[in-house]
Length: 161
Ligand SMILES: Nc1ncnc2c1ncn2[C@@H]1O[C@H](COP(=O)(O)OP(=O)(O)OP(=O)(O)O)[C@@H](O)[C@H]1O
Ligand SMILES: [Mg+2]
Image (tube, rainbow, N blue to C red; front, side, top):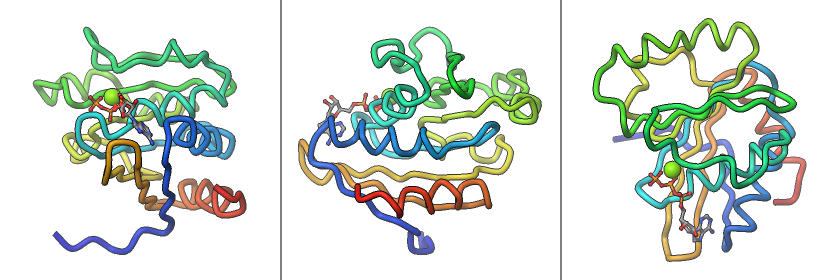
């Protein structure tokens, strides 16, 4: 599939580095943002979300891949819902969450495996495609898909990550 070139590509060579990238995203994130993450099992979607959450005031250990539910709400400087689309069996499960209303109320959404439910979601602000070329290296391709997403990218570009 042909995709447009990403607006920004960042490399990480450690979990710590990935957390730092997450911190920078969280610092730049505004209320009611939808961030979609793609990447295979173990790519680092949850690690990155932990970094984002940490910068919003959520303890690292509190953010885990949702196991029994498809999503977990977190408070913080900006409240956000951590959603794992991998476990969604039926589109109705997404409809029932009322994501549009949440976004309108200023809740941000971070969605792992976003490609599986893109057609069911409101406009994605920022998509991050994660690849794992080696055991400890990760590449993050950023696509700013709305002014909100672009604003996060602009902030990331100013940092030397
Ligand atoms: N540079 C790196 N950045 C992030 N994680 C790394 C890095 N190097 C190695 N890892 C390892 O990769 C794994 C990432 O796991 P994580 O749970 O974040 O993946 P995931 O994409 O959420 O997977 P899943 O689809 O199963 O939810 C961890 O075991 C982590 O230790
Ligand atoms: Mg995960």
